[in-house]
Amino acid sequence: MRGTTIITGPYGVGKSEFCVNFAVRVAREYGGATIADLDVVNPYFRPREKVTQLATQGVAVMGDCLNNNTGQDLPAVSYAFLSRVRSGEDVIVDLAGGKLGLNLLAAAYDAISIAPHYEFLCVVNTFRRDTATAELMAEYVRQVNSSCKIAVTGLVNNGHMLRDTTAEHVLASQQEALKAAEILGIPLKYTMLRRGIYDEIGDEIKSDDVLIYDALTLREAWM
Image 1 (spheres, rainbow, N blue to C red):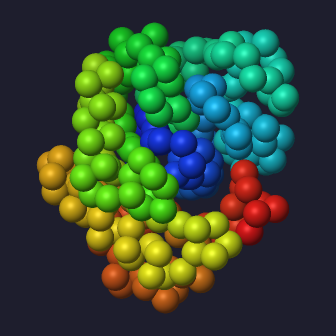
Image 2: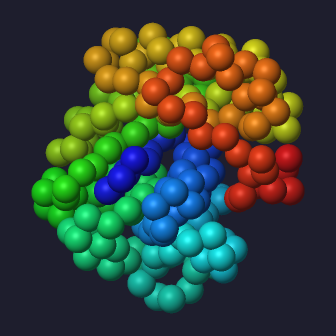
């Protein structure tokens, strides 16, 4: 998990929530992390809105270049994070899906491609239309790969129904994510799930790693 981790996925899968929780874990284990908030396509919940809270957990957020982190929908992104990418620091890039969102990666390609280490993760969730099945997951990743010079290196299962999420939801999404990973020839790298559900089914999780949370950061009122 060290180095640069780019995180993308279609609208509504929980990409930004995974990004924030992942960054907090990296900061806790390695002494700090940076989130580069490049999600300017239909942003509903954004890491830049939690700058103060995340700072107390060792996570710096680089949002737009207008120094206006809240209530700002202009696509005025900042690429100041690239200096940290080049130096090998732990940077997590919150990148929107779709062609428009993925285009923002182009300006960062040169720095990321020569970084000491990087991963490009796609978050999937069977309870969202664009990744409802293994075939749709695989097709979405192929579209991402065709739009970027950097190919997706792993999947993240974030099968959830917000406060109504059950162990069965997580496992059903995992089943499709594993099929998609096999189709694409890449690993299922992470599963994100609430601690109580992990306590129920931890031994049934098949991803390489697990990201456990106690409470959502961006949607805390929706729990």
